[in-house]
Image 1: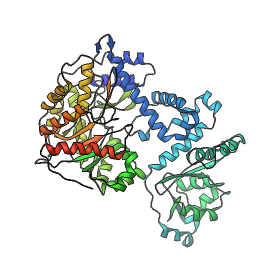
Image 2: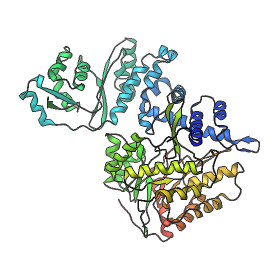
Image 3: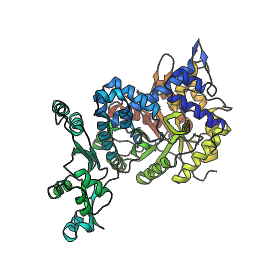
Image 4: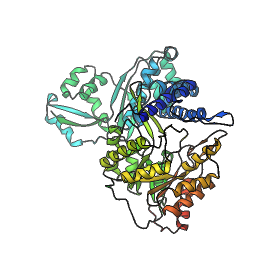
Length: 267
Length: 300
């Protein structure tokens, strides 16, 4: 449809008004397109526009808090509200499924020098939380136990392994798994997570879905490289070669039991 | 033109609730008597996962109505094809009794960048807006191969350019597309209260709402929504955060006398109360519909 019609221009003006930081600028933006209402000395147009602007900001905070509960706890309610508002204004959603919105929050946080100066681990915490959020809605995977017979019958160069929905790995310079798990599950304790942070412990996170449940654990040495190779559909032999630190045999059975590994397939 | 036949004939009373996350587990465990559940379509667009599994489980117990908040049917930019694909997939999976969304816009471009406001923004009531809305509704109906229901808004702003009433506009929409209306009686009331607050409209708000309903063809309505609202000093907000008020119940009774016992829904989206409170509100809707001669029909 034409984007130059009067309807399109009016809609564009109202949309722009919703994301402008200052209410006074927003009012100017829609002045030509919205019917002014003055009654009893009050300009109701300002109040009416504010209702929509506030609704968007409350919505932003609710959506981001659902995806980033740990970041919200770490920065506190007041700061999270301000961050949500700024993110809403600078990174407006582009689709009507708001569960899809917010993937850029980690990069947004990373660009806030004052914030990351105080809490440099926040962007990595956000990355782990987004991986958990995304894994919750990934397509369901179906384990194929019979397919594991291929591990016996075929050479590693002739098969690959099939992973759970939403598998994501993240290597961090911070104890990011401990921080997230301390806030979401209480294990380790906040005190223990704090000690690891002060001790400059670096952790690698693995996110996957165990059935319907998004899960997080420490990645084993070399595991992220191994998984990255499998996600690119490389043969098992190549994935093992890409991760010389990775110890495959003790990994295999727990990976099947926890739903991380769903099956094998011949190439 | 209307390629989608609307249901006709006498209706059974049908009362449901908007099913929200706090009540997922309790409802599936207790299975209260309800005629249908309604969910926000977008909450179940995921390819997989727990939310979709819960909805599929509920669908084995109750009819489900899919109520969208994101199609943005009045957007001059048109309908988002990705969004429509997700909705079509969900419709295939759930086989809902009804599919609905709003007579609003939310999509557009700001400084050349695509934006979706995540809100139900008002549209003017004129030919240009009607053409856009009809084209978008038709596109959705063709894709879903079923009629859509379109809900009237509670609107806090009036865009310039309207040259007809909301009821004339919505009636024309139904005639051109074959869609039905989902009449939210709380929205009509909120609009009437806000119009009285600014002096735009005089008279008793309940009477204003009844006159609004009188202007809608009696066969054009497929569902009614009921909800609470929040009255502030300078504005009334349609917040779906409290019980249906006595005035809105009066308007509802008037509506079902006019439209028949169309399926009716209690919406409650913030400060969500216990399930028993919601069920009580649905029961009240059911009792009112029965008092108007509807036939009982319970599921669950």
